[in-house]
Image (cartoon, rainbow, N blue to C red; front, side):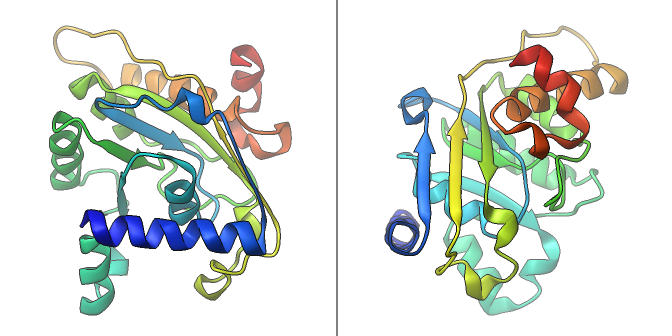
Length: 216
């Protein structure tokens, strides 16, 4: 898997450097080791390769289960470190997979909105807060702009647009003893997403616009 991943991410870097105005800010904020939960806004199917081209560490992703229905595509994604997840917010197996990978001190990427929101951030699923609390992983907030212009898989290698990845300061959630209520998880998820929104221009922040102004 590392060979396939680094080959694909290397090709992505070449394509974005050649066919886009590609800029990554804040690479120095990426922890060089240890478990990291990378949390980003989600606008396009181009977001994963853009992130892979932006960070020095190998990233692991979850993707909607529907993409794995084709056995060839599904096999390729699994080989690249992608795991299927059902988007109803109740995929216990996928949550366990993320927790196991984080316990192995890897970097797991999660798009808490659950689906693409090219016109501004949408409400997060509370699962991001559950995983962060359960693993006590370092949270790395990342804002992506420009991928909303990439409307198809065929355009990913040839974006012909400005792509910007803004990597914020890492942080973590304080441990909480006992069972955590859904309302607390929702509040923590909103707090995490406000950190992501703070990495974005105001017109990308969607439902987290006001919270980002507090965090920014």
